[in-house]
Length: 176
Length: 257
Image 1: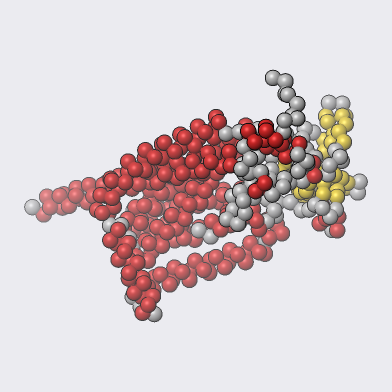
Image 2: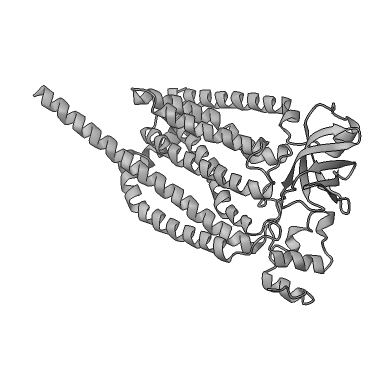
């Protein structure tokens, strides 16, 4: 075995050991690395009331209720992962991307009467779609953003703005 | 063992033939205009198309345009570190002098592009997520990558004997490469605030082709630009080391005379 070959095997062995160590560590800490817990996890095993958790899920369509306490807006909405739903109460201004059907992460504590959030973050999904295409999909009844992610990407990702306008002639003229 | 021995020897001689500093200098001089001008052209075309002509996203509005800088920066941040790791391997196993010089020159360029990735991501995060920064797996692993770059830059220049610095930095580059798969798969292994990849090998891209084309162009342009800057810096470094050895050899001859 030449010195170069020996060095190569030594480097391969070191990198393999390091990789295995990192993989084991990440596996051990996996539950701490996740950014949020899901509503079904919170419902099946409620966290202690003094512990801050991040709750992630989709805002249930039709569940958003907004009121005002003086100047501060208060929002109540349900967050679901498809199996369980948790009611979230949040005092403050919601991010621009917040809407029904959007994935959100609420930071706060679990109370007996529901989840009390001190911060709400909107989660963007991996979909990038021009406005006209989204409108056309909504018009054609293929997709309602309030009930979840858009249909399979093959059906729309090559659709151009012109196609979208052609397919949706009933679109009301937007005032300039 | 004889098969692997001949493989190692063959690979070694291949690197020595195509990457000795003199040959690299000749190749680099010829290659440079073919990197610089297409880089400028494709970057300007891709960014111009993306920033001014591509459609706005239905939810994000015009904020989506940050993607045309952020995504190429993110991919190059990882690719640049992968290149550092390859240089580290060549340096540790084959003791290749050009790999050491390349590692010195790739580090700062990679650190800058990683900083650009983090800054553009933060600028996008504020209006979209509602926060500048969160400690989720994707963002944290990219921040670790940035610190690995900074550590590499510092370590490779930290010793009076450059050979010791090269050796230490090569070990750091190889060890830090563990972070690369973590960055790539963080959005699949754990739930994160950062969105998963839109472009995958297995499925159709979940991105309108009217946005995919300008993204591809700016990706191509910024990658060529990264290569152009690294090649230019590396050529300068090779010439500098030649000048230094020439100067020291004439001084030595002067002392002897």
